[in-house]
Image (cartoon, helix red, strand yellow):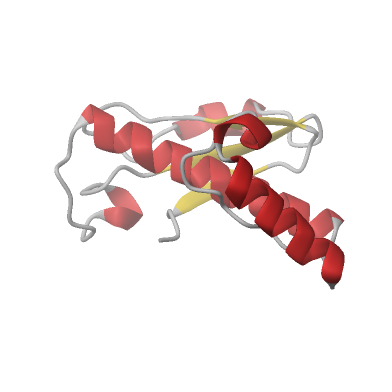
Amino acid sequence: MAIAHRRIGTGPVRAIVLHDWFGTSAHWGSALEYLDPEGFSYAFPDYRGYGDRKDVPGRWTVPEIADDVLALTAELVRSTWQAWYPDCRVHTLPGSGHYPPHETPVAFVTEAEAFLRT
């Protein structure tokens, strides 16, 4: 699921900025005018039930917001990698985190060898 968000900037330092509980990504007002768009890349997501995601169903809880922010992070990382490396393929290995060779060795080797065969 794509997470609706507003983006400002194209700089190398990336940040995801969250709004208050009953706000939206549009409620940052004049503060947005003072951001450095060349030094930073900002993503302002809306929570489920708010702003551009008003009609997205959910539990509307803090853990769900955290899950959506993690999904947005993965989405942004994937789009960045694909821009830098247009021929890349990104595969998610369920159950892995920071070190797939130890956490999911069979899935890691399977994907790595499939890549090397192509």
